[in-house]
Length: 107
Length: 120
Image (cartoon, rainbow over all chains, first blue to last red; front, top):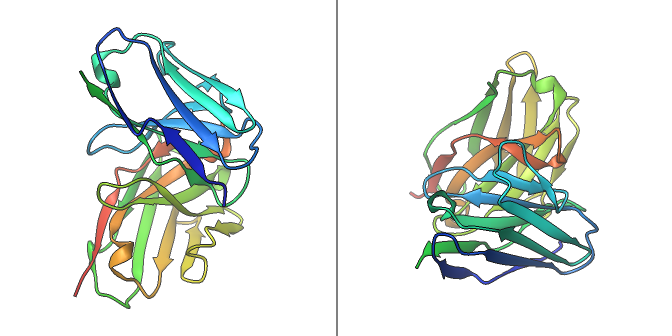
């Protein structure tokens, strides 16, 4: 199984900050990476697919980049509704796997 | 709109079989891939397996010997069976749809999740 390592595991940031989360794959996965946002008590929500494609309805302050083994999710200007846990997921090969998550907290 | 709803027992005894159903509304089940994903309390996400309406399946090797995912197109639902459960199978179980934009193996619509506790 392809291991995904997210960093940091948590971060504190203020409204308006630029936030970057990293996901590293244990082997190359081309552009087969998605990002999800999960708020407490809620199901995950798809944010980015194919590493850099913005899911319909997701604000443009979210962006994704990377290919191969190194990927990033960036929130250009953090908003109050963005405080959540973010997970990366690879879909280059089975079994599908998720990163351990990055919790974005209010500073 | 498309909605998914998980249902099944919230408590299962050790060594018994966990059985869940995901009822799909707002779209035919015969058009997408469908997955089960779980999340132990306070932990991350684990993909369990997926099914296409034709019955084609893929499973996580870590669970493969105990998992069966099936589909009932007449009822527009799909199901999960996990045998020989232990406390390690205690988790919030989600069903999800394979995204038509992101590919079958990303998930654009999720159920609300159903908590299953394994305990005697």
